[in-house]
Length: 181
Image 1 (spheres, rainbow, N blue to C red):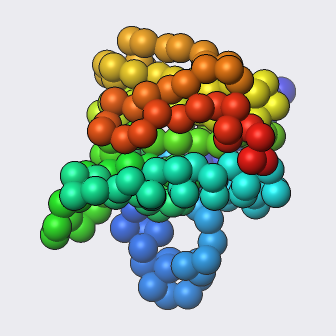
Image 2 (image 1 turned 180 degrees about the horizontal axis):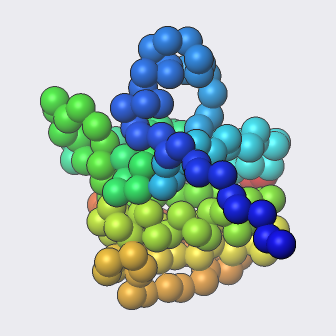
C-alpha cells in the first residue's frame, strides 16, 4: 500500500518577508523561494568566492550611468525569487522590487544541476542573458534570447575564448577569470 503524501504549505514572497520581520529568518540567511518552497543557498567555497569577487571587480570598474552591478541580491521571478551571484541591472530609481536584470551570472562548482535549472526562472523574468560559470568544466554556458521558459541561444565558451555581454559592458576573457581563482 502506497502512503499518501501530506499536503505542503507553500510560502509566498510576503510570507518570507513576514518571517524576516518577525525574526524567524535572519537577513543574513541566503535563501531562494521557488514554487512556494524556501531553499537554502549553499555556503560558497573559496574558488566560488574568488570567481564572484573577480567578476564583481571586472564589471564594477566600468559601471556607468546605464547599469550597476549587484552581488547576491534578490531578483523576483514569476515563481518566487532567486539570488544570482552577480547581476548587471538597469539604474532605475524608485523600483521597490528588482524583477529583471540585463545579465544574471551564477558560479557553479558543486551546484551545476541547481544553477542549470535556474535558466527557466531567468528566462521567465525576461533576463536577456544568463551565464553559468562552470568552475569544474572550466567553461561558461551563455544563454541569450529568452522565450517563455527557455533561451533560444546557447553557447559554451572555453578557456581561450572571450564573451562580450549584450549590455554595454566589457568583454570577459575566461582565461583571466580562471587564472584568478
